[in-house]
Structure formats: structure tokens, C-alpha cells
Image (cartoon, rainbow, N blue to C red):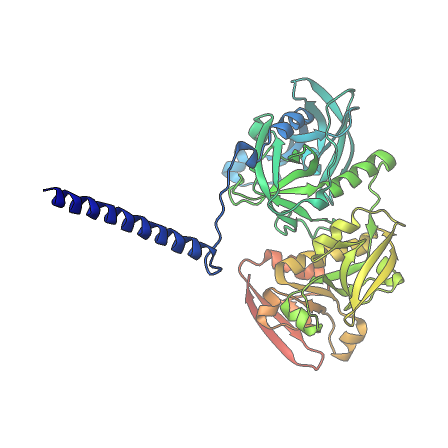
Length: 481
């Protein structure tokens, strides 16, 4: 009996020791596999509430400086009578009606200076401002700049809460921001989002882009919810700094669908300072037409990296022309700020005034050069031509100019518009190359780039382009829009 008990006891001891040995072996194997470089290294993290963005400081600080702007303006509507209904519509008598619109604004000075959008106060007969504490004041329009969609108004008050401009150039993609405004008359509404893109151009933002009015488009794109009534409101970072003025949304419904756009503080601040110091905007010009660089352009220019913007044309007598910038130069940076798109160049130039001196870094024949440029005052004709080509580039991916008399005479043409550059877009997809002289679009004779743009805008779905190449070949191109 004792012998059997001893055998059982020894068996249990051996089993326990065997199990311990197996467990240690497995643990050792696991530790080896975890240090194997073929396996991902894992680390423990501890997420606290401080790991998430906290907007309370910025929201509580900034909401007091955002105001509700109400505008009374006069609109003209046709007035018809009962006789018109039965006997046909004649020339109706215009009827003047008052209409009330609303937007937002941001106090930028304790003495009552408020920045908003130009389109918010456009045509205003009377402007009133309601503060966060529900006090209402009559406001005076100091100035409005349609090119940047920035306006400055003032109320007779002192000691007001205000916001300071931040550095919009230092904003990073993915950085948190909050939008404050009065959508649908819901006062002091705060929404949050991230920086989705910078230096965004919106060709569809203003359908009257080609009406002779110069536009500067270099928007900050965010996914913070913005709706009608938010225009002119504040876009601020988590520090409570004003980094943009909410301006537009991209939507097919008229309400927010995920994309909102703000004028950068760098542009808004310069416009506001000009209004305060000079009573008008002092706008400088570089005087170039540009094309963004893609892989095909980079290959043609023998570029190793895709960067900068290609100069396609230099306006005679302009700042760039006088400083020695030439077509086919590639602008890399302006005063040390890298530029990789036309809106980026516009944004940098818009910071300066006429006669300011800037350093423009270019590539010429693959070699870097630093050129000193003295900016000139805007010229309405050059601005108009530049704005036309800016929108043409957005729609068809090409820039145009009126064909010279010499070119027309050589090709025995009486009219025509020359294609100066072709980038990514409809013209390249159709096969149109630089140097092509457009004589007709949709069977309509064209003489100016503005006429081309007007026909494109009126065309519903397609274009028929007729023209001649420098070797005399007559070619027809068809393309969808």
C-alpha cells in the first residue's frame, strides 16, 4: 500500500515539473519571436483626455469677438399687372424692394473695426452689428475688396473683445481648427474640423470670374461645418488665433456637404491694414502668366523633381519683365516661401504693396537663380488678362493670348487666339498643342481669350474647336465639358 502511494506521489511531482518546463520553453519562444525584426514591434500606450484636441479655450475666447452682421439692401424686381397675364408681357415697371441678408464678422480691434466678406455687405444701404452680448450698433463701411472678398466695417464702440491675426502660412494639413459664425441666424455657433487643403482655387466659386474683375483665390479648405450665415466669420486655431475668414462652401444643395473655404489671414490682414492706413487696397503685381507643373511638363523641361510653377508668359513692362524673368523660367519660391501652384504665387504676392522688393527663386535651364523684383502697382488691363487665363487654366488646362498680326498674316487669317501653354485638362486630352491658333469655337469666330471663355461658359456639354497650326494644317477638335 505504501509503495503504491509513493509511486502516485512521484508521478504527480514528475508531471508538475514537466508542465513547468514546457511553459518556460513556450515563453522563451514567444520572447524570441517578438524580437525578430520580421515581426512588428508593439508598445503599450495610455490615452488620456489630454491626448484629444481641446477647443474650450479657443471657443470661449473667440466667440465673444464674432458678431452677427445684418444688411438691408434694395433689390429691383419686375412688376407685372393682371393685363400682362392675359394679353402678354410688355415692358414691366421696375419695383424697388428692401431685402434683409445676414452674415458674420470678426472684431479685430477694440475700437470697433470688424472684418467680414465683401459679398456680405455688397449693395448695403444699412449695416447693423449685433455683439455676443446682444448689443446692436449701426456700422459704417470702410472699404470692400472684391478681389479677395474681404471688407472692413466699423462701429462706434471701444473696449471690445477682439482677435489677433495668426500665421496662416504655418498651418499644417490635419491641424485642428474651429469655425465660429451665425449660420441660419443661429448666433454664436461653433464647429470644428481639420485643415483639409491649402491654397485651393475654386473656379466655380464665382461664375462672373471673367467680368473684368480680378480675383485672388488661395483658400484654406477645411471640413468644419459652414453654412449660409457663416460668411465673414472666424476660422481660428486651438490657440485662439484668427487664421482665416470663412467665405464659401462647395455644395450642390446650398448647404454644407463637407467642404468649406476661408480666406487666409495673411491676405485678409494686408487688405484690412490697407483700408485703415490708405483707404484703399494697394495691390502689387508680378506680371506673369503661369502653368502648374505635372510629370509631362517636368519631362519636357528636364526636371528631376516636380516643383514650382512654369512661367508661360511675361507681361511687357511688368515687374517680372523688368527684373529679367523670362518665359520657361520655373518659379520655386518667393521670399523663401515655396510655391507649387498659381494660387500659391497669388497668395505670396498679395502680401506686398507696390514698390516692395522681393526675392524670387527660379530655375532656368536646370540651374537655380535668385532674382530681385520690385513689384509694380496693378494694371487693370493686365489684371483682366491674367484673370481670364487663370480661369481658362482651371477649366480647360490651357492659357491663351490674342494672335499677333504677324502670325495672322503669315497664316492668311483674319482672326484667331493662340494657345500659349497646355497643361492637364480638356485641351490636352483632345490633343491640342501649344502654338495652335483657334479661329472658331462652336462655329463662332473668336479674337480674344475672353471670347473663348464666354463661349465655353455658355456651352452645355461639348465644344467644337477649329483652328490652324503654324505649319498651315487646319485641324478640328471635339471635346466634352
